[in-house]
Image 1: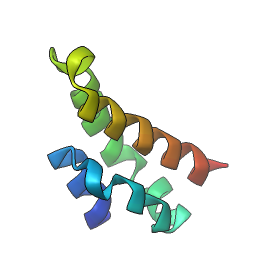
Image 2: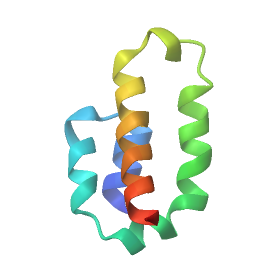
Image 3: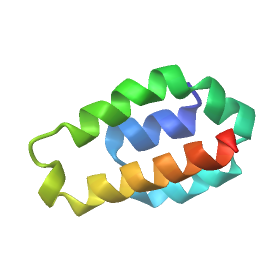
Length: 70
């Protein structure tokens, strides 16, 4: 998995999430099998509904994935 995507998902690092748009589309698409379970883990967390940071990280990651797939 691309180091930046891994860091954003593992640490819910919102400060670096915007930089995902500088990662090549192919790298993002290739990382889908590894990123999907990490995203699922974040939004299945019991604190997700009240954790605006986690929500923003998921939103940005999904936007980047959608952009790469298009």
